[in-house]
Length: 447
Image (tube, rainbow, N blue to C red):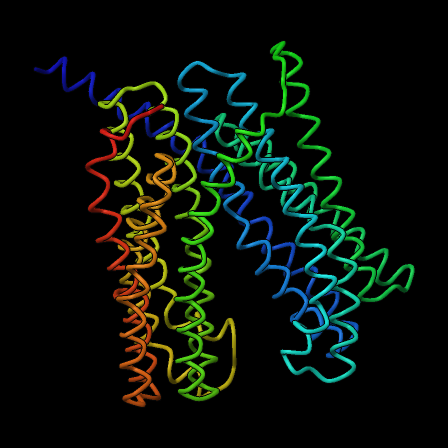
């Protein structure tokens, strides 16, 4: 009995080491981007309010386009991991190549759409002429970097599927650091202004793509694998990507609808909700890193056709998701008295925040559970279920928001109810729909 317990403990320690070996570098890559983007924003901000407002518009359009294509990483990781787990390394790389090809194709399509509809999308935000000019300048130049951005997502998914999260971290840190240097030179040194910021972004994205592609190519050559593009693999990636696109769309719909309700509460309430959502987004970096570990490890385990190992990995990642959520709860509760002052000095906004911040903090274990479940199901390539679950979640959540909107709740009460609706209502229904699926995962065919 004691020997069995000791063996089980050692097994769990092994899984834990693997989880964090993947999660910590992934967390570094996730955190690197917003830090460097904030620095980039600060540099553009010194050009004046028109340039900064233009960056806000163009940046939001670009982030939406790229955000909806995140499936290129999330779909690739489990497919590659499963092939690798089944002992088919050539098939794993072939799947990754198909994803890169699909990313390039979608990148070209997005560039065409952006160039054709860019003026309409910018005008729809009703900017002043000066802001519209700045937004257009940034948007059209930055579009040159969209294809490599998407191919970087695909290559990152490939490497994560092979349990390599360090290489994307190194490339991200070097790339975003280079972006800051280039932007400083182009914006201030050469006087290109906001156009220099966009050009620096596009150039760095191409350099990041070539760096990751070179790493993958050298590994393919060293493994003596004959790599050919298979159209069937591209179609498989596209099918899986379609379902993950729907899943991502439902998440963004929930966020957008929440902002609409917050807007109806007034400027101060909307500003306070923006702070709440920003803090929630920061917390998701740690939780998403664990989800990435779950994707890669569950995918490989299913490829190895080892149900017992798969169950153990799922249990360990869920455990660490909840523990991470508890740690975030403690951190947010301790920082509650000062968090608001990091974002604003407006007395009206600060007065609204305290109880909403407490609710946000208390919801973190639930969020940790949900994020890991999301990664587990992605690792199982259970993408149709994720999409349908997302639609069900929206059907349940949107009426909650309608009730808040129709009752006209404002002030502290309105913000508290809105925060409860998102952090416990929306995340709660996600926990239910995703949690119901997990027990059946070891019965999902691995072929």
